[in-house]
View 1 (cartoon, rainbow, N blue to C red):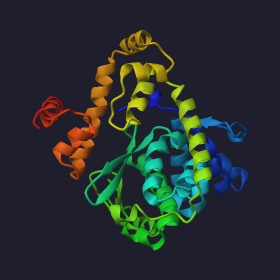
View 2 (view 1 turned 120 degrees about the vertical axis):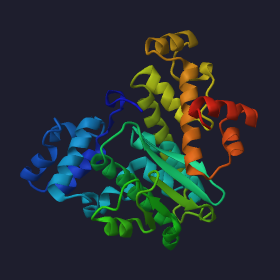
View 3 (view 1 turned 60 degrees about the vertical axis):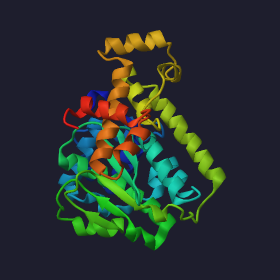
Length: 329
């Protein structure tokens, strides 16, 4: 779990959209921005960025002004257009399976410090949400709801009424606005779940998108790659390596490849990590451990399947790693 000082700034578009949507008077705009340390002039620029602390303060202000569940008052905040290139890439994908793959891969380019981990079960595909720091439930809730509502809106365009077969799981008890949230999501909702996750039946993955457009999807992905590249240029070397590993299919990246991706020599990479008190192998091990924990908790993969996905040569290698990671496993 990262420290709040390690988190990356986000594009200010969403922060700005909230101000524009709810700030219909100078007094309302001032109340939404109170305590954020951000002025309207600062966010009125296409390349503006916003830190996580001002963003969380804005969410707190919104809850105080409009009540919990305030996101449900403004569907334009979670329609595909609000998600820029990510929304375009998802709905222009050839089918739902490709769309979900892009969503999991690039959500961090659109919403830094958040991830959707893809877990493939025998009958369902699970997107498990993770935020990079521990937040109070009141602050985490709107973060998760924004991602799930946005995902639901994009998926709905592709599958239509079949959206009802998709399950949304929240790791907290049902809030007072639970029924309204369920109606907005359009699928099954479960509360007090082990984790925040979306479960999609594999039978839906071949559903073709009515807005499939290969050229448009390709262009949107290029923009997302640019955003991810810019983001990787910021922050500590340790954080950049961690993000590189999380985007890897197996959680493993050779150190020479990682160094090249970060524009460093292997010697410089090792020195910079040593200065942060960690080794490259430690970071790879931490990523593999985190993935193993998520997949074991999800219960949709066998131990042999998990070991294979983590790149272990045989089952005994994964078993030894599990005993080291989890002691009792």
